[in-house]
Length: 146
Image (spheres, rainbow, N blue to C red):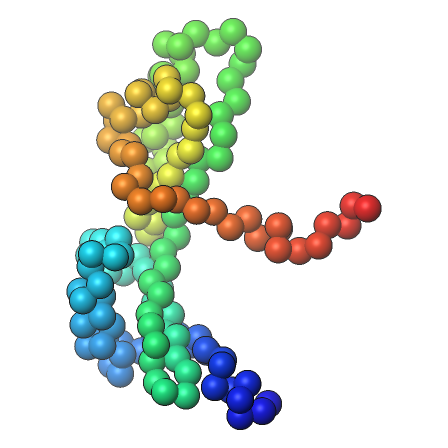
């Protein structure tokens, strides 16, 4: 690999708490106005940290955690709002339990239905305070359909 190309490359490796820990914490707190730092996920060991570096040294850290996404809702046609509400309430109990088994700190739900937004906020869900972006991994691959 050419030296010029090496200078443009940023590499990623697993975080090493002994060698990277102080720098990571310094940068994490220095950038608190720009990040969504949640100290709980670090205390509960719910995060994997990646260290980005180039020939000049470490350039950044990227903490990643597992999160559950409620993908969509599919109800029996004509199901009453009361029955939907009961099902959602029961589902949330199951979601919290399953997430705890996976040491997962978050769940996200996206919906365009104002009824569900109003309903789930009564049970602890909050609107995201930051833009939520998605990356669908299968979209990165070329489609076999022609």
